[in-house]
Length: 298
Image 1 (cartoon, rainbow, N blue to C red):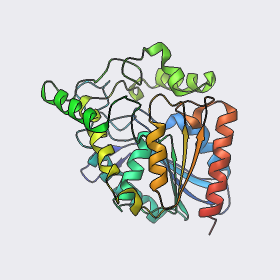
Image 2 (cartoon, helix red, strand yellow):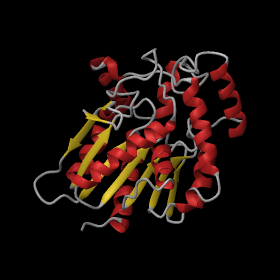
Image 3 (cartoon, rainbow, N blue to C red):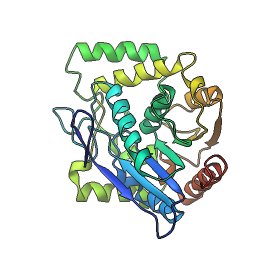
């Protein structure tokens, strides 16, 4: 456990490579509701390739405590809290780990990493965004989503869940796997961790979280935000992702000055690093090739 600037405890994992000079350092950032145990398989792949790997659970989820009265609801008052946590942890991580420094981030973590880059608060040698949450698959514009979410925070408790179960409003729990991965064993791995550590499980997001997400989407869409990022960025996404908008990802990638984008088809769901081997192996190979080009061993 490490402490944020306000003293909030954040759970972290630090995993060193086998003997020898490290290839560099990776800071991995998970998505909404994630805990870093879900990605131990990828951490091990990178570790055996020589990378020093570190990750943390966002405040309010995983092993970093809860921010809502209901521990099953994923809540945050302001996305800026997560931006501050990331900026502070990144500075500490960069100072004590070998270069090159790489941030790899999934879903909500990808959104927060991109926003922190745009605000100039981190400057890694490279960044990889996996299915980044740059918009929802909702059929209405962000301004309308923000208007509705803001109204919902005012007519009731903003900490209450915005939906009941699963990862998506209106989606029953039995269909949750189809939203995430085609790989049964990797999905079962997540369920195993939750059975062993029930405190890691998290349910729907709060209405405040939804409001903050839409506000953050709108902020990143402003001219000059994405264009200001000079870090080389690789984005991996899925055209059939039912949780985050592939269209928003494409639009964002076009605005990056040093951006590379690869879109998978119907063979991939949201969790590309936990997908079936044909997708996951390809994603890892693309990440390796990208990092060899833009963040070579020093």
